[in-house]
Image (tube, rainbow over all chains, first blue to last red; front, side, top):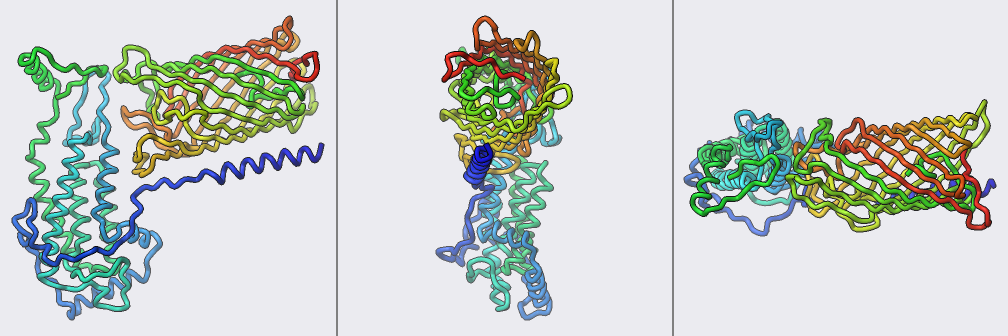
Length: 306
Length: 299
C-alpha cells in the first residue's frame, strides 16, 4: 500500500508540473520592433509640402545656442549625468519608443480607439443619450470611437506629425547642430547612428503633436497621454540623441502644428454627424417620402440612427 | 452533477462503475457588468442547456477516476435586439482522479479527507470569444481540490472544499483585443480562480435519500471587467456566490439505480450572468467483476 501511495503522489506531481510548465504564452502589448537604420536620408525633407502649414518655414523657430557655448556644454553635461544614472524603467522606455516613435503613437491611438469603440447603451426609459464632448464623463463617455471618428482622429494625428516633421527638417538643416553623441565621444547613442542634425528634436515633435491631438480626441485620457509624453521626451534625452534645447524646440513645433490641426477639427462638421432622435426621424421621413420605404433599426429599444 | 462527482466525498468501491446522465436547464435575464447588475434587451433572456454524461470508475476503494463530456446549447429568447444565433456543441472533456486520504472514526461520526486532481480541455473547436453564447471558456483547465467532511452517525454531515483552477489560453477569432490595454494576439489568458464550497446535508431512510444545501463561491485571481453595454470576453474577472439545493434518491427495488435533482442560484457576482439552473439526472452503479452489485458506499 505504501508504494501505491508513492506512485499516486508521483503521478499527481508529474501532472501538475507538465500542465503548469507547458502553457505560458506570449501575449504582446505592442508590436515587437526595435530601432533600425533608415535606407536613405533626405536632407531636403524641409522642402516637402505640408498639409495644413504654408511651408516648412511657416512656424518660426529661433536659432540654437552654438555648440561651443557654455550653455550648450552645460546641456551636454546634463545629458551625460542623466544617462549615467538611468533606472531599468528608463532603459526599457528607450527600447520601447525606438527611433520611429510615430508607430508607437499610432499604437496608443489604436488602444484608445479600441477602448472607446463602445456603442452607447439605452437609458432606463428607452431613450439614448449621445456622447457629449462638453460632458465627456457621461454616461455615455465621450467619444464613441466608431470607425469614422477613429479615422478622423488618426488623420489629424498623422497630419500634425507630418507637418511637424517637415518643419523640424527645415530647421535641422538650417541650423545644422549635430546630435550630442556626435559632439561628445563618451556619449553612446541608444539607436542606429545617423547624420541628422538634432535641433529641433523630431522625436519631441512627434511626442507633443500626437499627445495634443489625442488629448483633444479622447479628453478623458489627458493624464494617461501626459504620462506617455513625459516618458517619451525623457527617453529622447536619455538615448543620447538630444539635449534639452533640442527637445524644447521640437515641443514648440508640436504645439504649433497641433493647434492648427485642432482649429481645423473644430470646424470640420464632425459635430453635426450625430443624430438625435428629431434628426433621425426627419431623415427617415425624407427617405420614406422619396423612395416609399425606409430602414428600420432593429435594436431594442429602437436607436435613432442617421 | 450530484452523484459521485469529483467534488463530493463519496467513494465507489474498487471495480465499480457509476454512470450519470443529467440534463441541466440554466437561464438568466440579468448579468453583472463589472459590479453593476443589469439587463440587456440585446440578448434578452439567455437559456443554457447542458446534457452531461459522466462515468465514475472505482480503481481502488480509495481512488476513483472520472470522465465527463457535456453537450451545451445556448440561445436567446425572442424578441431580442441583437439577433445573435445561439451556439451548441460538445464542450470540454474532463478527467479527474479522486483520492481518499483519511477516513477515520472521530467522536460520534466519521471524518473524511479527500483530494481531487482534474483536467479538462475543449473537445471541439468551439468559439470561446462569443459571450454570452459561447459554450465554454475554450481553455484547458487543471484543478486541485481539497475536500473534508464530517458525518455524524445519524446521517447528518457537513463538508467543505477548497479548489484552485489553473486555466490556460483560448484562441479568439481576432488578432487584436482590448483588456485594459492593447493585446496584439488572438490568445486570451483565461484567469485562474479559487473556489470555496460549504455543504450541509443529511441521509434519510437508511441512506436511500440524500438532501443537501450548498454554498459555492468562485473568485478569479486576475482579469478585466465587462465594459459598458459591451459583450463579455474570456479574459473577464469572474466572481460569483451561488446557493443550491439537491436531492438524490437511490431506488431500493432496482439495485444500483438512483435519481438526482437540484436547483442552484447565483446570488451575487461580478462579470457573470445571474444564472439559475435546475437539473435532473439518473445514476446507475454496477460491479464489473462480481455478479452482484455493491451497495453504494455512502457514509
